[in-house]
Length: 202
Ligand code: GDP
Ligand code: MG
Image 1 (cartoon, helix red, strand yellow):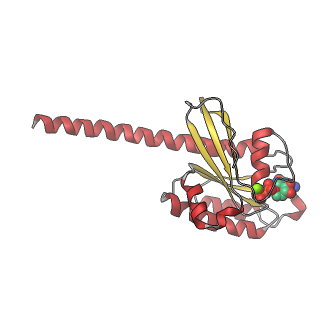
Image 2: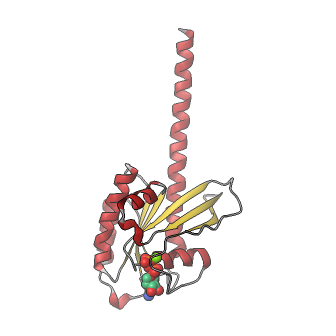
Image 3: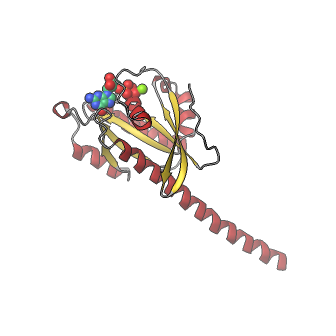
């Protein structure tokens, strides 16, 4: 795996994992987001990680994107990847119904590994430019996403449709979740301090 390191290691870091069946466009989406280029023949078996810097809700942040590939068939490797993720981009191709069905398995695996159903996720129907080859209805995908309480976006890594938007929605969800957790911890910290003080007085 290759790692491109960013310039600012002190920035908050958000870790995104790309998941979905082979051939749905995980690499194409990642490369479009990173380099604004459509690369049509990226090595299908390659897992790679990328780092970039973005501003999320006014906060400059580093983003790690792990573009997974076939090795995740080995459950232990896949679980390790998933464990490190803070947000998941669940990608299927609107031209392949099987890839849409497979997303439910990925979703289940993510929830199992993370043990938390509030983990930030986005459902992405890619290859939206191939309208005449559509096999997955927008409504069906929207319904699935709604049942998981996550957003749905249709993208095209080829025409650049909604690529930034999809990454951005996920980054916002990661950022907001961290903020909520930090705030909750802050309140907890204050409470336990108070408690300690009371104990001391007693
Ligand atoms: P991965 O296995 O999920 O990483 O899929 P790839 O990114 O390697 O893409 C698989 C194939 O689909 C490649 O030939 C890509 O050029 C093509 N592809 C990916 N995204 C799109 C898209 O949005 N539109 C079209 N027309 N082709 C795409
Ligand atoms: Mg790939």
